[in-house]
Image (cartoon, rainbow, N blue to C red; front, side, top):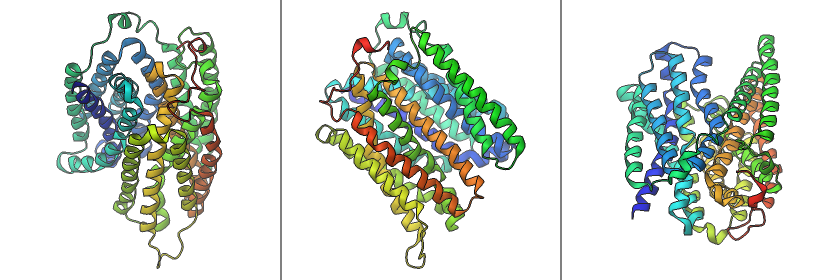
Length: 466
């Protein structure tokens, strides 16, 4: 019985992270208004969190491997909770951005350490448990915006951070009593084996690369280009430094020998494209609905809700049947559904007097959620099969590539939309482009493990320094 309560506790942490991400998007306009800041500066309240998470997720996975599941989970949850409490009392925008970085540093460790705990608690049914654990995220995505709206209307935007801090305290208490203690041997060498220098190179590359892409969205502004090009060049320099560091480091944050392997390269390509097409660009759907079909803000927000329901149901069903279905089938079907939905979005919805655009968008969103829900548990477990002895590290890498894909997809999409004046045609180009990219990535599925019994792509112990 204890392990089921432990599963609930770590799932609550993932739920907490999901609620935090979606609730802040609802609070965003109120934050800008109260702090009297520009949208550009306010955007860093969101971007700083995302970039910090992407940069620190690999380090979090390593820390969970060396420090131990329980210790690292408690550490990350405590940092996230403290960061949330500080965000609730931030006096100005710059303090809020810094506290969001602290919050993200803790949130980066939720998924890797929790995935390791779930795997340890359910060794005989790992595939099913990991799949069900992953289905918690869309539940938080459904509840987050609604909970955020209620808290903001009643107490103001700071209440969203106070609520996440309170839930964080509950998670910490549950973890201390329910999770099994780590061995002392792990804790002795935990900090010495972490590649902080590599993490710094990675963080610098991501920050400069994303800043450069953001500036490129200001088409026609030569000053923006004057900032964008040096940022992109400097980002390339940090990437070069990262590669040199990882080749020489005894404990690299990104093991290049592993990443270059055919199955891992295929998995990373698929996860990057999946993050871009299944998550990243769908944040643009409300803007698409408002600018192209003149939907109200409330209608545009509601259009996304069926997507999360579809994702939750499909993810749960796939997780329960994953041992029977295997990995490849759900990934192929789910990815194909996403491609078809992106193609449908690329076609202008004509005949509005017969087909209501809102209804059609709701149906498309429902199917995109189902496609993502089928693909996610299968892809998660397929990646783990490549190196099942190091689940936190593999989970961290998978999450990093997905988030990076989503961030890059949003940046490039906004460049296209801004460059074409925000017209309906610009959204058609974006959806058609990423639908084509997703279609091109489908063959990578065949280089990944097909089922729990397929060990053809697994990395042998002598092939990696992890």
